[in-house]
Image (tube, rainbow, N blue to C red):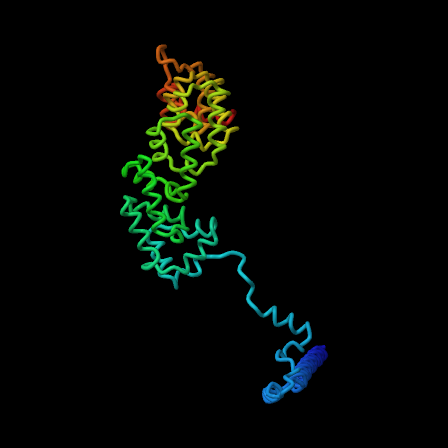
Length: 364
């Protein structure tokens, strides 16, 4: 029996070696035939000498100067597949090691990720810039107008196309703001808050400021305060001014003076979508029951965390502590709905434990 098993193993081993030898011969024949086939095709192509003679002849040449066009489509497709695939998006990170400009911008705090995801054309332009020649003059210009060093990175991240705007044009924009009564302090404040004060051209800024003043009938000094506090206001479409003004005055009955007060304290109100503003005003004015005067004293009720305001009011209402009149006992200032943490809210105004409030939120 042992001999029989050994005999079978020898047969299997021999058959495997035979099969392997056949496969190798097959591969060798295939490769040889492929080389012969390629040599035949290449031998049929014109030589450099033939091409030169044909070009020198009076009648010109009818020889195909692109000999590889005679290869069949299958081989073309194979060659095409050898190329590296095209990148789906432009990635600045791939150029950082070889670009001094990108390295210096990163040191300044510029977010290359934000730029390539919001403005791919600007990202491509950054790679082509020489830092000393193209970037330093702009950075010096911004610093000369009191942009703080810690804000340079954010400013360029928001406005990466600044290097494509002539410096003389940027100087004119500053001069325009000064001609409209903006002080250097206000311009500096605006620059350190947002790039919007500088990213729009003069014609656009002039139109927006004019529309803003017409819509809200607001004194120029208040407009300057609002713009320096919240520069994105001059980047909003003029239709947004109309919708916000209509919602405040016509739908919720605020007077012009009350609107001025709200916008001066919380200019972000101008950037709220109308349905969202209506929801907030309905909660604060109709549900909670705060008067126009109280809302003007606590305007952050319109820009603060609406869910937190709603939850805390509901909790106080359940405890019968929703008393927002300062002339009555157990007064709760409206700021308690958004300006302090949950622990302080429970301890100082709800007079319950934090665990009870969390249980309420879970069942809300």
